[in-house]
Amino acid sequence: MAINQPVERRNIDRRLFLAAAIVFPLVVLTGFARTYYLKTFFHTPPLSTWMVHLHGLLMTTWVVLFFSQVRLISLRRIRTHQRFGFAAIGLALLIVFVGFLIAVHAAKFGATTPSPVGIPRLAFLLVPLTDLFNFVILFSAAILLRKRPADHKRLMLLTVVNFLPAAVARIPIPSLKALGPLWFFGFPTALLLIALIIDWWGNKRMNKVFLIGTLFLISTFVIRLAIMGTAPWMRFAAWLTSWAA
Image (cartoon, rainbow, N blue to C red):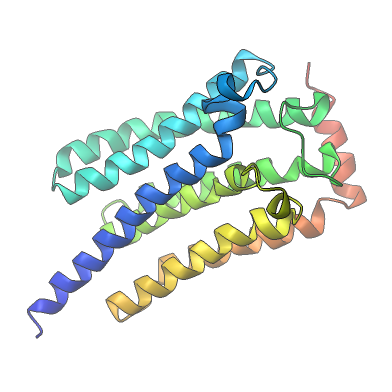
């Protein structure tokens, strides 16, 4: 029995991350199909700038990279996985830089896909900026813990979940979109909790890094909702967007 337990745990890990590698691209495709991937078929407004095209390309590359890295590990191609990991650092820097510019520009001038109904653009700016902040924290931790595979891969999983609200908010189901933050933050939260429970159950112990990262990510969903409409944030957002050209 003791001999089989590590094998069972590896199988559970493999299935969990394979499921994530399949589900996340599908959610992203569903959310951005009308406004990006299949916009020609839906006749949606053109993207406003070339930077938006670049942003879409970078984020798509991150999702593809996550899928590829999960696949490489399952095939035991560790060296190739590590090489892609070094390339991911450069990609991450571009994601943060371009994402920041796009977020500030959209807050000042508007975007092809507007912010949720009832949330002013300046208030909503906190959402993408927090996404970028979370990404920096989680990805940096994943790099620092790259020699601890169990922690590293769970942190990388969190970097993908961190970006899901943007796709979830764009899924074209009016009844869900009407729920606003309850939907686009609630769905990723549910996925996180399910993954955490499966991981805990399968490994018979709680991975502390995964737990801390999950609680951190969920807390930022709540905190930004509490802050985004406050006078201090609106003043800061107005100052920040005043630099946008």
